[in-house]
Length: 434
Image 1: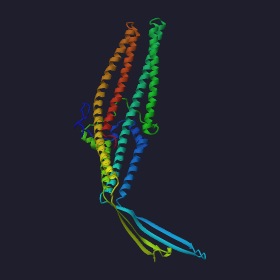
Image 2 (image 1 turned 30 degrees about the vertical axis):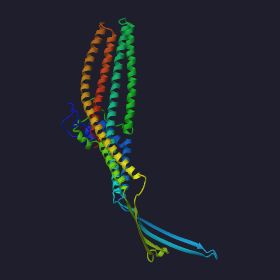
Image 3 (image 1 turned 60 degrees about the horizontal axis):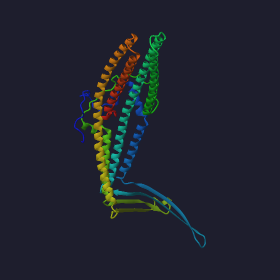
Image 4 (image 1 turned 90 degrees about the horizontal axis):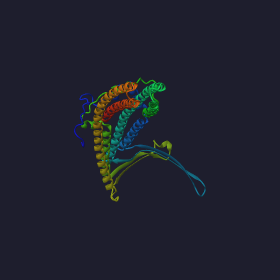
């Protein structure tokens, strides 16, 4: 394979456990609310429904190609009554004929593998669409889970913005009282007022972000969110199971998109057999057996028996290089699919490697942001005390409040990135189908 033999090994990667491809999404997702949303999405999402219908369509096309391996048999029946008028005395002569026959039309003797290659190509295309459906299902599980946590992060941002608004409103109220008694000047009062206005804008912003995140989740689920969903878990809680990465070689048997590329390669290879068979003779058989009579009532008793057998040989002599061009095109298409297959493997390796590195990094980032929040909280406490004692200006308090708010936002963002990297690793390893 055109990839290293091992993935990066971050410290956070589990060394043991069931592979992602063997871990169903119900096992991976421990939060009941999210599990219910994924269940609804798998039933109602329109993109997944289209992928399933394409599998059915491809299966029918494979059955059509396979039917060419067997002779077709048709029953044909006809009844004709015809009158001819004499041109001299106008007498009408009436004739009647009836026939019934069973006929096989143009059954090809597949000496050179054209029909078998066509059947194999259709089979691989069918299996390709089946892997595409599995890939679509895995992607849907991951997208729903990721969007759910995007919504949860937006909701937490909204809660934080509202809490901050309450705090700065209280601070503004206290500053207004101090201004009225002459303890602070107008600059500190207007600074506190501007802080309130900024907090109000933040609340409006996250109200909009939350509504848009909800709309996106509804689109992925495919229907309105159920009204009886279980309550959400605390944001940042560990609600996803850890899975080991394994080896890159395992991805060949796990990732549906790699298997999809493999079946596309096999279909292109079978198409070479179809193109090669065009250089050889084509032998087809047509035959029929039946009865014919001039009276419908005596068709089966006194009717004449008839039969025909028509073998046909078609030998290509000259087509201006069309067959050679078709074979060359089929071989080039096969080489293209080889490159696509190798690229699918490379892409899968990169996605797993990125998810492993990201998961370890964001875990450390969450811990670091929690330490920053603790330090900024203490800073704000000290700055507020110094301001109340007249030892410092309100700008110091404002700076501490803004830095604490930014640190709290950064922690939420790191928590979202951490859980998103877990979901991405699970998807990249081929999990989420069972």
